[in-house]
Length: 376
Image (cartoon, rainbow, N blue to C red; front, side):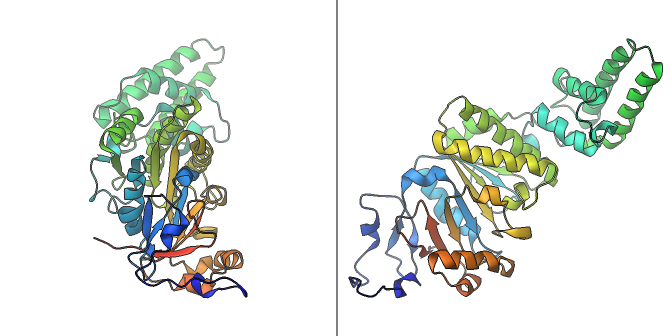
């Protein structure tokens, strides 16, 4: 569309199909993504120095988001020297195409995240709004002191319950009021009616986040297959991995890692609640640190804004965007883009599959480029 917009008195150069004006945009760059629409031999260059300013891929189901990621973004990041950790929400977009694959229930979720999960499940162990309480403290100490991971769910649950109970009984023996200690034990029992074997089973994995990073560094790519898990379990595993990456960057360690997050609004929705709030804030922190320490965040999302879209604070950190066919609910957001880049909002509603507007820091062109790509 942009090639039709020519300002009066502009100097115009005509190119034939044999010419390649894309080479003029970024001389010397061997990193490209897709091709200019309708011109398969016009590969579109990218500016490598902005990869860790983070990437957003937006488009409705059927727009070709996962194809763009698989056939263009992932090879590009590997060529640029990044190791990849791919969070495959459904387990069908990336797990069948790349190796190695790590199943969700094999991952060790850190004690802090496990405690947060069960605190939400039990309404803070019966104390509701109060952040600190003796039952939660006893359960946390049990998590940290008992070797419960790697066991069968029944045994692990029993070990945690007995350890937490013994801690509370010891604390209660020091109280003057026996009723207080009895209340603690009753709330522990009530909480463990909700902390079932099925719930414990979600967190029996023993593979540490550092092992996942080491595997990614060794093999170049690692896929986390999240298909066999409930949403809270998926968020907890992601949180554990992402928190480890954050700690490394806080120690000023350069990563050269790309974290690809499929189904972005699951982690950072428009209005996050519960563990979503934690993952949203963590993604924002990763974006801020990643620019300095070589972490590129790539987020795929069906929607751009509002109820179907990505959290606005997260989206503001995605300084390169690929926008395919959008949902009608995103029409207002499309109008804002239209005002900035002279893209027709109606065009964004009707883009063919596999066509994306490329805009932002990685784009060497001052205006968005409409790109497509070949599936081989």
